[in-house]
Amino acid sequence: MKRFLLLLALCLSCAGFTFAQDLPDATRKYASRLDSIVARQLPAASHAGICIYDLTAGETLYAYQADKLSHPASTMKLLTAVTALDGPEADAPFRTEVWYKGYVECDTLRGDLYVVGGFDPEFDDAALDTLATLVARLPFKAIQGKLYGDVSMKDSLYWGSGWLWDDTPDAFQPYLSPLMLAKGAVTVKAVPAEAGKQARLTAVPTSSYYTLINKTVSRTPSAGGFKVTRNWLENGNKVTVSGNVDAARAGAVNIYPSQDFFMQTLVDRLEGRGVSCPKGYGFKELTDKSSAVWVGEHATPVDAVLKKMLKESENVNAEAMLCRLGVQTTGKKHVSAKEGLDAVRRLITTLGYNPKHYRIADGCGLSNYNYISPELLVAFLRYAWSKPGIYRQIYKALPVAGIDGTLKNRMKGGSAGCRNVHAKTGSFTGINCLAGYMKLKNGHLAAFAIMNQDVLQSKEARAFQDAVCEAAITLTGE
Image (cartoon, rainbow, N blue to C red; front, side, top):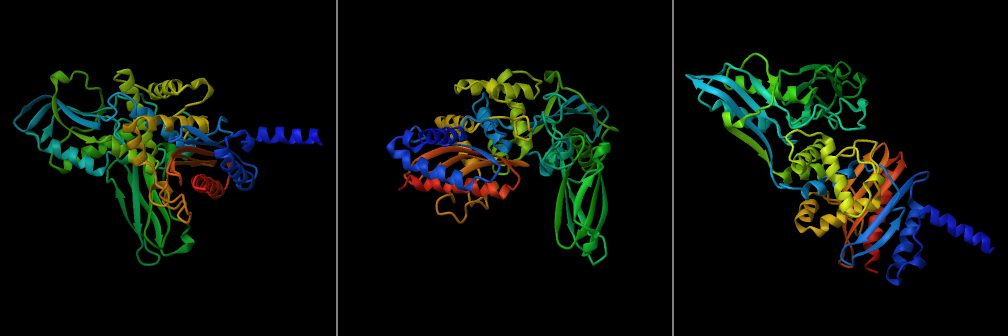
């Protein structure tokens, strides 16, 4: 019998449960109740790692397989955000600048116009209009030289390591470039007409760079589901909208490649404002600014980029933060993702962990090559909390349970989690994670990470995570 009990204890230990008898009296009941939730509610055939750390008390409240490697999905954005906000010039805005070289004679610029990309992921249709208006106000109405886009900030690799080729043309996986317009995507809205007729389409941003093809049928179920796609296997930009439109519908596709989409659309806007542009455009670095004239810029605050990155889980925002992090930490003018990832690895070392024990492949979590642990996620959250300036920015930008962002519809019915959990979600096929901060019933603040793996039904993983959060918050008040 003793041998059986010993074997049972060893099996439970390998499974990762925290033994209540090994914990201080104050947390024994807490750990036991959470062990029970893991045993009863963890989705069948799946795995999970959990780490909950009481920041106020300075102690671990609960750990279950906390050191095991997992795919983080979009919780990877937390590592990117904390590292970027801890870097030099972290509060500098993302800038897109306009310069020209040459001289103005009568109403003609006898020289070249440059648009210098700073990888602003929030540069949208209105921002492009602002930039075009800046140029239109200059004392010339024709450009006799060349129109150049300067995309030298980043290398030409337009996808992150491990990104899936068949996720294109989905808008969540755009072609990355220092010159991004509307996150490198076109959004098409459809409004139904009479039954059997084509729906009315509008596309934003409008541009001559792509072709819009309308194959929709209004109020006709036999036409199939609504779909927006393009001829992506040919790297083409024929955006085709098809299927039944029985109510207002919308869809988005990425455009190939982002920098050309930006430049051609800029040409359209300039000519629409009466500025005659040279035929075509090119890409060239503005190397000597001392001989150039600064026209103006569009700047986006870091907080605006961070908010969309965390609350709405925008992938391009994370990759932009990572790229700029590389520039800021190395002082180089030209970088790749490697420089940004190296900065993340250096912070891992600073936190007392070995970066060789993890795999950091991109800044946003799209890559299946990423492998980190719950305790590493919590270590980054703890570090952010130790730096009030960073913590305030991160906490404000995180989704709030039951209120907004990707947690808008989570924990609404719970007695504890709603409003008290500020956390980043992360999910793709088989992966579902949640990491951030929670306000406990005893008034303390905790950092936590829950990483579910091998769960095909995301709702099961979400229900498990919500149950853990509700219990973790409530039990401290008992």
